[in-house]
Length: 281
Image 1 (tube, rainbow, N blue to C red):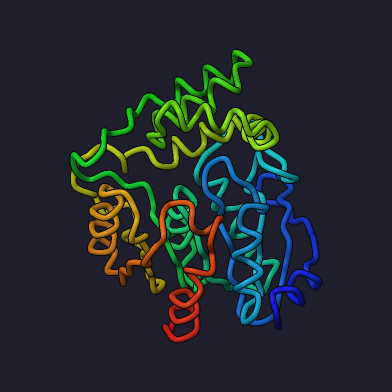
Image 2: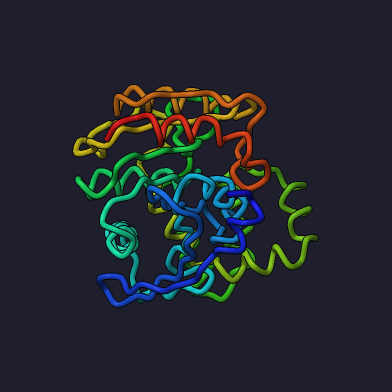
């Protein structure tokens, strides 16, 4: 199946999560199921190119995390609710699936794999934003509360700017350049409440101290940790620590950086194909 063919077979659907929240998703291709878990301030559109490539050999489930795109949301957020969203998707697509997540989506994918034994066949974590040393400043644990305050005060644009500045470490000129891309910035501003979710999701993993592996003690699915060859230094040490903690394979993708899953996903397909089709669950 070519990239063009897989795009033509894309179908859209909706599943209702355990708390009643509707979760929108699209299904592409044929074969073993792999679910794509989006990073912060992203929805399924950002993973669509990767999905089209993987659809040559897999059934790709690409969804809007709660609070994004066509999915609904709830009054309160917890990691457990997002794991329930993934469980509902897996159940509606056959009961077992591989998970691929990038950045904060990688953290969610690992959490879900640990929480759903028997339902996750493989898990791939691309550049989870784990900080274990002094290669970048820690992310303050109170960031989520600060972002929540900005959202409540109807200062969504400021919340997005603060998330980029503090959580992502983006320099001011980069944030300004993004603000000039008006349609993209408006899309992110619409997802501003989800900056709180991702900040809470990554809390405890970005303190600049050695990683506590207890969070994923129950993980029993084969795991692959990926880092870009152009990834930031803290990503190199963070992924090393993660792979060691969860007994995972770690691979470096030459020429790749943090935005590669969205911008140049073809760089990832060889590693993903090898892991998803050869590794045994």
